[in-house]
Length: 91
Image 1 (cartoon, rainbow, N blue to C red):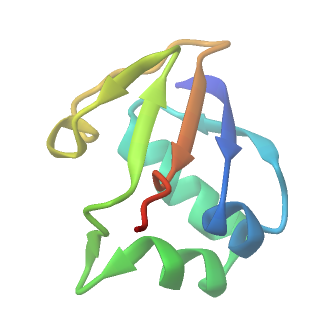
Image 2 (spheres, rainbow, N blue to C red):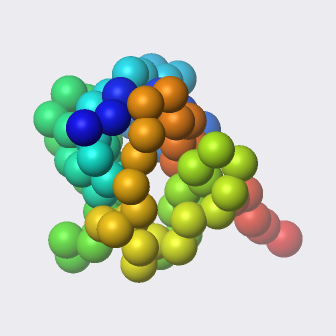
């Protein structure tokens, strides 16, 4: 299991109540589940809809975008930096 830095930006940062945290996880999905345990229901409610991560959230691992479909398979290493955010849009 790896210890990584999970960084939040935008609305999810407000719901998390922190800018970042150190979290353990062997995969991105495991790290997110561990973050949910620490951050509580407001974080989970913002991140999920009908049991799935909302489609507009992006994961960037060490500067590379990770497809949401592969977060359960993407392995983490000690010192990795995972950013979670929703791109800003509008008109």
